[in-house]
Length: 259
Ligand code: 6GU
Image (cartoon, rainbow, N blue to C red; front, side, top):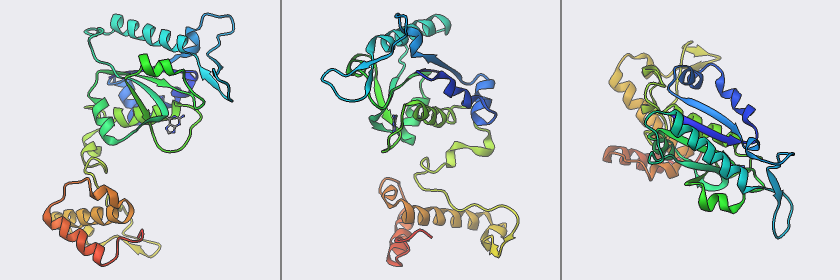
């Protein structure tokens, strides 16, 4: 996948180049990531990218011209450089903004199917509305809190998407069992030692009985989801047995507190 990011702070994306899952994907050529400076697409002497809001008010607004020109230049460059790409290859152009639709695993899965995406990092104070009207195909927010710019949000999105690409995760850390892929939160995990500061690893995990282990984990995942994120249970498909389990847990009132 090819990922192009338009930002006023391209250096921020250097931090993705560290060793790890993402770094491996970059090095192995599974992902090509380029951060472009919007400022490079200005034409005036002072490289001005923002201006006062019409109608008044505090906060500077990102001007439309450098963003339009940056998107057009980057697209033209991609069509030239990437074999098989042209303007008919659908490429999402995503504005990262608190006003966007809430990011989710489902959106990450959708985006991971594209050959490329172009991310525009907005600034909290605002982006000229014509960028929304004429340039972007999607607007995404990563949660209900305010960041000073879209850069960190873009990194969150990029990480969630890239780890879904075929070949990025080894078989040992498959994305298949992820919370939010199964629709349930993860069950509790333990490693050695078997006793630590008086706390024991649950007996069943030491038993070697895989069917029992699977059953325990599944129950724990349901319990944890019920306790912490009950609203997720409404969206996931559960067997009638699991539904009964949930009802029993609710009756025992274990659903009220995080344990
Ligand atoms: Cl995408 N941008 C900013 N500035 N703040 C956010 C956000 C994005 N998502 C949550 N908060």
